Length: 375
Image 1 (spheres, rainbow, N blue to C red):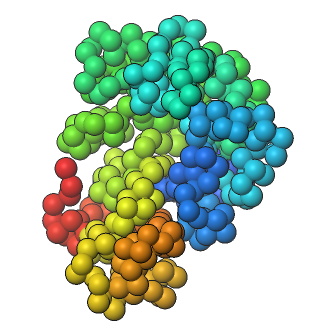
Image 2 (image 1 turned 90 degrees about the vertical axis):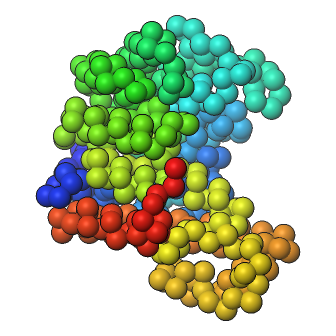
């Protein structure tokens, strides 16, 4: 079978799951974090470097690759994998998040979504069928149903209508899927903060039938308390034998809490985005390397890290690169941040195997957040 998932251990302390996700381009231990390669590139890093700082699974963006260079051009390279020379596993989103993030230049109707190009202003249209066709051309191992991601605070009536539309779109997308044998199509569970709508959405998606399920509509402006409340609920209703993907989440606290709530897969642009602005994730918390206090600091970026950045460069040198406007600084901190999250997820998996994830969470939060996660 080209795609399968197996839970290999459940943490006695927390109910967190350790598993194996098998794809046509590699078997992956879960929980796993996916670096984001929006434009068929993880920003500033070469594919060889991405292999070093990932567990072998990355994400590409359907909307952006559809617009530039076009999915047909990517297809003619053999898909994203051939286009960017990546030999690992790959997931693409559906373009549905742009329905949310580009709300000022789009109109939703039953057939699909009318867009204005975010740069040129040209009219565009994306339907569930077209999203799947584009993703068929992009050639990822895991692809996503086209959905609407409403604002978390949308009223109940709007959220219910949106959920029902997302269900109809999921059925249409599955019917249009031309490569079910080598591309696993996931359904996306929407419903905002409303448990009954989350359950309605999931029940209908399960009836349609998908090899995996994503949790959508989170990390879009709601509080962490609200997000965790939804996770605590949906973990009780999601199928136990299918992978669970929490979309767009990548801060260290959310990865640990997400795993404690049964999530198997995560992605986020945050680690590379903050790196390009000079913020590093370290074993003792965030370091803003541009700060003057690091001007003469001869220590490595993270004394608890064995990545090549921490083995070779001082904080003083990294600060110099940012102050001088040298792109190498962005590259090095991006590399380190992704390596940090790769190491964190390995520690989470080990803690699950040892039935001690709650203990790990307390110790990690004490070191990274000094006992108090970010709001």
